[in-house]
Image (cartoon, rainbow, N blue to C red; front, side, top):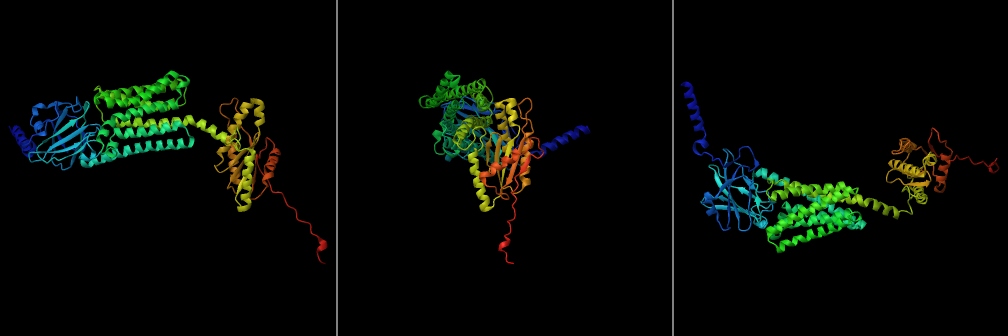
Length: 585
């Protein structure tokens, strides 16, 4: 008995100390705000009603609870012309919660959404948003519908959402405190701003390359970058909030039109990147026709009803992306150097598009976050294609640049010719005399070059010569001219070098690097360097004879000398003879 009495007293104590339990029990379908979660998506079952007409008022909808049926929060609703979706939400504040709350629907393409809340006087307040409404009519301008909730403390209240859309819809609903929602908005705008800014930068870079190199492919790359930037901005609601503020009709159709145009232009850019006509001339013509047909398919929105035209656009998107993916496979089979970058450009798009088409068909549940992942995949195609274009045009531009510099550059090594280097030496000599600038002149000789040619042939000798130039460039700065002044000799000017130690340090690095065996040659081949040097500020040798004097120093060195670095010494001067006859006694 005492034990039973204690249990009864505890039960009475709990019931008496809980006003919510004692006076206002919370229904099972109530969403409680402020229970420790400041931002969440509704996942519990919702009460919905598909109204076959479009004239039902909030007063009528709220007076017919029998019309509403409970179903999953992300149920796919068959919306369309003259079909309205009503959603009933029962919301309640947790005990002690005083935060301001918001409700948002992260779907920028929804035609129209209206939130109805009781005004406490028997009427209703309403807030509207959607891409068929001008942003000036929205309760809060933004990327997608976003509403403020006005929930007094006390018993649960019912709020209603009235949704119109031209096609079937699965609608996620998110609730967040005002402070948390402001942070989410800033994060979304910052992420999208960085993405769009990067795309704009790449487009401007392509325009600069177009102006400099007059390559039409750079123009296609710039256009494609701008289209992708605009498409990403459109599907995420940025253009609706910033550009199409007073053009809701265009904002509504742009979500469907711009992705199709961008994908069509991507095929035209790919056709310029990888010349299919060389091995797959029939597929090349098919690719060109598909690209222009995709761009022209947007005219279906002018002649077909919106739902049919939207399905045509989805099929075109999937088909064109598949065609582009096939091109990447053909480029891989053809041994193209850019197939990896083409795959990186198209595979994320293809996978993201498959997911979106599956969502549109109701085959997989809706994930609103997929919009951001797909946008990132599409944006990634721009740097991939721009880099692929730079790889393709690099060798061509290098040949053009070298052709322009043939009068002053050696055809094999790319260094200055003897005549061009002599002019640089003359200018340096003038600066030494006029302003006493420190300049070192060095002549480098490959001692075993003739042996390599006799043993391995001319091709290997030329390969070793090029490797020697690479090693030579590693000890030079951009301001240090270098030239080829013999079959196996180079001359360099070291600007700003004041001491022999500084010259010796850099030449020692060159000699040490030459002792590393050259890759790809069997048996192992090394390069033996010797150098003759002169500091022009301390020994101003005339430029017309400087190279010849340094060559004489090199010729006087043994191939096996332990002093491979020698400096040209100043010519000693003799005292003039004293004329004693003219001296007075």
